[in-house]
Image 1 (cartoon, helix red, strand yellow):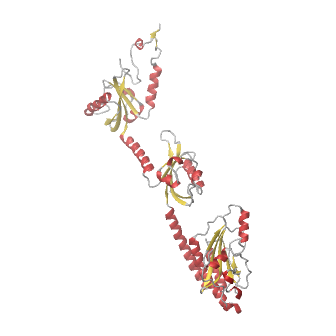
Image 2 (cartoon, one colour):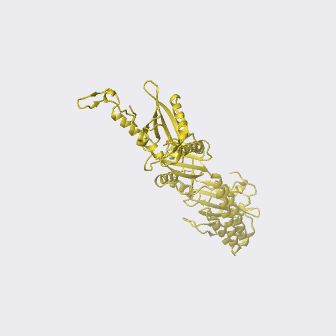
Image 3 (cartoon, rainbow, N blue to C red):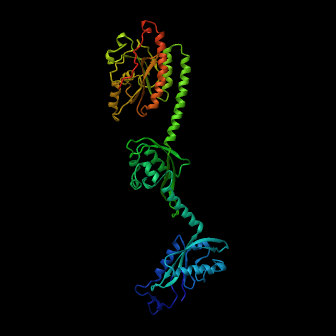
Length: 497
C-alpha cells in the first residue's frame, strides 16, 4: 500500500469495506470516507495560505500543497513519494538533522517550531520557519508528522506588524483610532481615549458626532476622502471641541490618515481608516498669539505715522480707529463726556455721566468712521447699566456678549437696547483717559460668527484708546469757545460693576 498526496490509499477495493458488483466497481461502506472526502481534503490543503506538507513514520512525503510549491518550486507530483528532503529540498548534510527534528515532533505533545534552510528547485536557498505536530491514527499512535512553514522574512514582517500595532495601542505618544467603514471607532489607544475624555471601550461603535462637537464635519469629510481616494499627502490640522469636557474648549489636533485594506483579497477591500493625531493646541495658540501681536503692533505703528500727518485732531481719531478695526472688530463708536458743570462731580458719584456721540462707523456695514466733536454730536441716552457707562465709572475695559441663543429677533432687541447696530453680538468698551482725566469711551463691536472679545483683545483696545484719547484731548484744547479750558468728567477711583 502506498500513500498519495490526497490522503487516499491504493489497495484492493474490497479492503475498504465496500462491496463489488458484477462490473468490479466498489461501493464505499456506510460511514467510510469516500473519494469525495479525499478530494475535499486536497482542495482545502491547496487553498491554504500557509505552505503545508506531511510525512509518514518512514519519512515519505505524503502531502504537498500549492503554497509549498510557490515557495520552493517543487510541484506536488515531484514532491509526494520522496523519502525525506535530502538531495532535493535540502542538502544531504542537513537532511538527517531535519528528519530527527521532525521525528521528535511525533513523540512530543503540541507543536514544535524549527528553522530550516531549504533548497528551491532552481538551486536557491530559503530560510523557513516550520511548525510541526504529530499525526495520530485512531488508536492514538503516531502515524506521521505534518509541517506548516513560511519564509522567515514573511513571518518576521508579520511579527513586526503585530508588535507595531501593540506598541501603538499601548505606548504611543499620540492618539491612534481605527475607524471602520461606517466612520465609527473600532479600536482606540490610551492617548486617544484621554484626549476624547472617556474610556477606551466606551468609545467603540459610537458615532463621531457623539464624541466631538465643533470640527466633526471636517473630520468625517477627511475620513470619507481617505476611504475613497487614499491618504492625503500631508498631515492636516483640525480644530475640534470634545463633548465630554465639562467646559468644551477648542483643541488643535495634528492628524494623519491611512487607508486600511485587507491583504487577503485579490482586490483592495477597505476595512476602514487609521487616524493618528497629536494635540498641538498650545503650540498653535502661541503661534496665533505671536502672529496677532505682530500684526497689531504693525497696525499701531502705521496708525501713528498716518495720524502724525493729520492737521485736524478729529481726523487723527478716525485714523487710529480705522487701523484698529482691521481684523479686530466690525464697528467702532466713540462716545465723549459732555462738560457742563453739573456733571463735574455727580451727586454721591451716583449720577449717570452724559455721553454724546463723537465718532462712529456708518450704520449697517463696517467702514471708515465719521467724526463729530463733543458739543456737536447727539446724546446717546445710555442707561446706568450700559457697558460704556460702567467703563467710564471703573476707568477700565468692560466686555459683554449676547448669551440668549440663536434667536435673531431677541439678539437684535438686545442690540437695540444698547444703542448698537442690530447685528452686534459682542462688545468691548475701553475708557478714554488723558492727563489724568476721563474723556469718554470707545466701543468695539463684533457680529455673529466671530468669537467674543478676550483679555488680549481688551489690552489691545486699551492701547488704542490711549492714542484716541490723546487726539480727543488735543481736539478739545484747540476747539474754540468757553468749553476748551473746562475739565471733563474726572474719575480717579474705579467703581464696582
